[in-house]
Length: 222
Image (tube, rainbow, N blue to C red):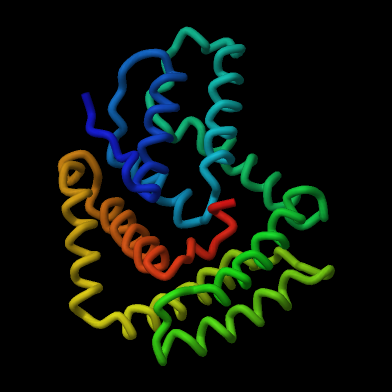
């Protein structure tokens, strides 16, 4: 039985997609390197897990009713077009003002409040957090535009993380990195190095933020 990645929220994105695809496909199948890299592409694009699973389900439901339904789906790549379509629908919903749009605005405002309550901020991260909180409140207003919002959030999180890491010092950061490396070590033989590297980076970011009472700054986590 494959080891579980449930202990790490970043790693579980990959594990959940693998398990869902394999279970829907109907028989055991380990993902190929190309499949893992495809999931990495979705993660890098900030496509939420629920959107990816919806696309996979749509693709496999369509296959089940097609003329070629007796032929097994051999690769996750079969689902890529439907995942892209599901992602496009989600992006449109963010821009059109419905529930997805309201969720995004609420998230930005809530994160600004979390920054005001953040613990253990140092001389470098405190002004960054204050400026970011003001920027989030401004973006969360009635004229919220989701265009390029995820890229903007990624940039702001990167600046915040850099300040937090510098305030923490090399020793504390190295301790977090060692914990992540230990947690991910069982998967070195299962996933390509590029995938593990991304999971490691995201996991370290999450743990640094959580140490200060913060979550990830991304619509991906809504």
